[in-house]
Image 1 (cartoon, rainbow, N blue to C red):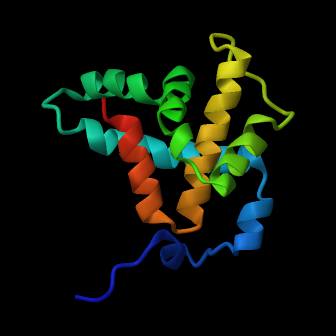
Image 2: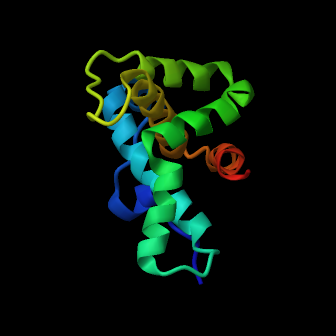
Image 3: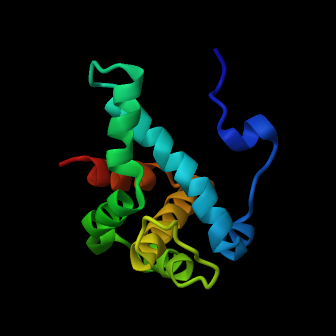
Length: 138
């Protein structure tokens, strides 16, 4: 068996540190949303639940409110660079929260998702795993 590939090798798309640092906060949040959802889905499959029950349980972790709460669990553990990425996305001007979500909660959720993508794209997997574990554990 050969060396495992990562997603950048699979698709031939690799971002430089500069490209990641300059990436739109909304684009980062878009990627981070998917990455975090994958972690959540993997985490909750330890429960012997039916598909519709898994979907319902996943919303407990991936809603804007849940992501805001997840950020609260990790904020004291963030580095200066990580906090900068979070704040840059949180403060980005083009936020429009869904009608059932408070705008301030949505902004924190966007910052959280951007942080997840930032770590993922920079291939800081150990750090990403460490923070996600803090988010998901009770």
